[in-house]
Amino acid sequence: MADGQSLQSSNQQDLNPENATTIQDIELAGFELLPALRFLFAFGLGVFFFLVPVTWNGQITVPFDVAASTITARFPSLVGAVGIAILALGAGMSIMAEFYRRGMLSMNEETITRLNLQYWKTSPLFLTLRISGLLVGSILFLNLGPSVIHKPNIGGLVWGTIVLSIVVIIPLGAVFVNLLVELGGLEFVGTLARPFMRPLFNLPGRAALDSLASWIGAFTVGYYVTYNVFHRGGYHKRDVFIITTCFAPVSIGFVGVIVSTLGLLDIFPLILLSWIIATVVTGAILVRIPPLNSISTEYITEPDPETVFTGSPLEYVRFAFSQAMDEAEDGKIITTAIQGLIDGVKVIAVILGTVVTISTVTLLLIDQTNVFQLISAPITPVLSALGVPNPSLAASAILISGVEQISAAAVVAGSDTLTRFFVVVVSISQIIFFAASAPMMVDMFKEIPIRFRDLVVIFCLRTAVLVPIAAVLMHGFNMLGLLS
Picture 1: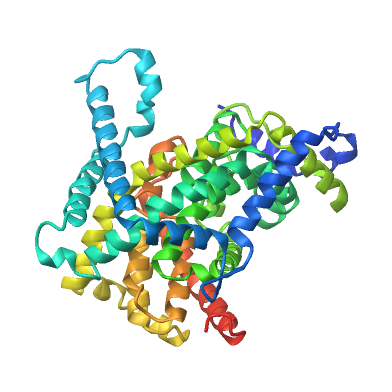
Picture 2: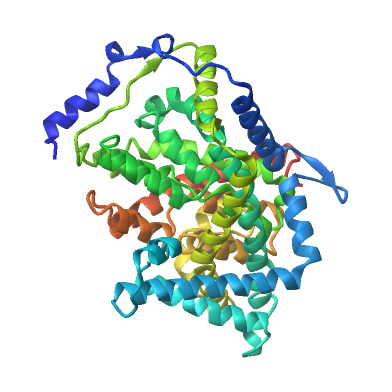
């Protein structure tokens, strides 16, 4: 392991302009028609699907909303049955992985590889949540059990809105996201972002790829990218801590689920813009204050600092396009789309049981008790002073999002547009949530270490910074008539 002095010198070398290489010195990939067409097709399709406004049923929305809403509305029973099957898959595979880990089940290496048991391995807590999610989901789907669980604001919301949205939106989004990732879109945007990462966030340019992997794929994808680069010497400990807590958000598909729960898919591009603004501003602030600016810059292996490139904007565009064509050279559109669908289903199988269990319990607590109102009481006057409608409800929601974000959305699903907009911007930008991302950070990055107490502090800091940002965006867009 390198010592602190050598690490510091490596970091300074990384920043030294004299060591910069101009893009003109790089041998860029030559133009090839087929990779270029693959990249342009995937990139254009992704932009159209997620960002281009269209008119549908008299409303301005995006094709993502049209496709997801049509499938959910026309085939609710089929989507529900698929939801139960996915819950069973997640619970069953997790049980199998646990039995194998405990030596209660024997398999040959080929079977282990084919089933990818490592993917399904989890902690006892989340194993319990996945199993209980199957039980609760079956009760909701089959209309069994006590009537209180089937109230419209509890079971009706969990099954009729949250589960059906997840089952449709994440796989559908994953198809187009995978086309972007595998056919050059990720490399193109990530390369263009490199000149801004160090000045704004004190991070290597390559960190843009980790963030984009989370944004268009899943935060788990971003974590694994970060983990691999960290163990190759590309990041030191502070880099990893900053990336995971500030730049590894939930995916655009998962944001779609939250936005759908709130009935705001018609302003999906506006929410994406707000999400980017809130995440960038919050990250730029937090990397410069404790605890993030005091994390060790120690590497855990031989340092491999990023070479600094210099060049004009046009040269960077050429460089980014070259990187994209390299990525798209061996890509296959149909195979990539199918793999995206499979990956989306696997992601749902891992998270759906947890979401069903936590959302149901949270909504029951909200309906039957005032626990979240009591905990969030100190925040309510702040939101009221910032002009947030329904401040007590919004305060409860932004605290609940620290546990599980869809549950937070469910709390304000029946509220006015301004409150829903404010809550969604805060909740999707908090990044740390203790139902999934926090345990995974703690488990994956033991060498740093990332501890739960650190994450609680950073969550509180992120929320404190995000609240005024979201309030300003809410009032600004409302004045422009975009939230009416």
